[in-house]
Amino acid sequence: MDNIEHELDMYQIALGIEEPWYVSYRELDTEASTLHVGLNFRRGAVFACSKCGKPCKVHDTVNEDRTWRHLDFWQYQTTLHARLPRTNCKDCGILTVNVDWSRPQAGLTWRFEAYLMELMKEMPVAAAARQVNEHDTRLWRVLRHYVKRAMLEMDVTGVKRIAIDETSSRRGHQYITLFVDVDTKRLLLATEGKGANGLEKFKSFLEQRNVPIEQIEEFCCDMSSAFISGIETHFPKAHITFDKFHVMKMVNESVDEVRREEQKEVDELKKSRYIWLKNEDKLTDTQQEKLVKLKDTNLLTARAYRIKLALQEWWTYPAIYADVYFDSWYKWVVRSQIPPMIETAKSLKRHEDGILRWFQTKLTNGLLEGLNSLIQATKRKARGFKTIDNFIAMAYVTVNKLVITVPQPK
Image (tube, rainbow, N blue to C red; front, top):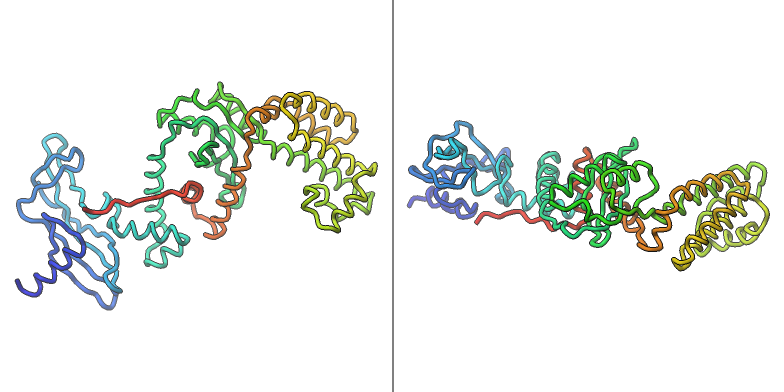
């Protein structure tokens, strides 16, 4: 065996290329820092039909030279080249074969894709793209492919309780809706848009995985009319628990509205926003002193604050007193003559059943708020994502901590 044949055999072993394929040439372009490796197949080779898998003889060869990016050899970017055979299967017809070193149409070898996935676990996709001298769009295609595969393999047969929330994908009020399994804390579906349309997509998601719609017993969400109508339309047997944190957020917003209006006449209320919104144990000493001075006065803001505290305390009461307490609180508010508080109380009264259900289910969107923060932190680290699909793929990776494996050649 001469030196050239010995060298080509070495490349074949290093690349993991198996019969009937073999390395037919290698070309080193030192100026471009690129190594080109040519592959060919033995005369009389038999290949599996790319559709049914039956062994078939070669019919002809595709004229086009196909290329695949491989792991770098030393400092050289390595590209594999081959013309692919086509088989003539009696059942499937004439089809191009699938190669062992790459998935169809990928243009990247399994080993290179595995390397990319490892990089993208540790750094933003744009940084990984610079590391390997590829356009980030190509890396995103790889990431989305393996994330989609991992999500399809996720077992969702036992899902019963769902928390729903929205998160912004980019500026301009573009949102995705998140559906999280409360019991496993997994993100089951992230979908573009918000409201009832998301519930329809979630229903389709479950149907595609043979999960009966009737299996979903509980939803936890805010009081969005779109969420409510979507649940009632697509999951008519499910119960709704309204998130208690959203309830308190509404009350806090009303307290702040009262303060903003009243501070126009009362100088003491200026620069006091946070003393009315934060829990007292979270205030600074100066803020606590100011709150003690103001909270028991007859100011409208102070009265609204006391209404808020009464509802905040409500969540600590036993379930058997919940409806009585809420009814008493509601009557107090509507007599208060504080319009923003009255408006909020009436809104809560209209959604009383879903709010009271918390005392049975204890469901909240607290988990989703944490996941949302995690997703937004990833978005800031990456300085945003170019497309919704990229954002959704990274949300799955971030929330579910997906363990993604890339098939390796035998």
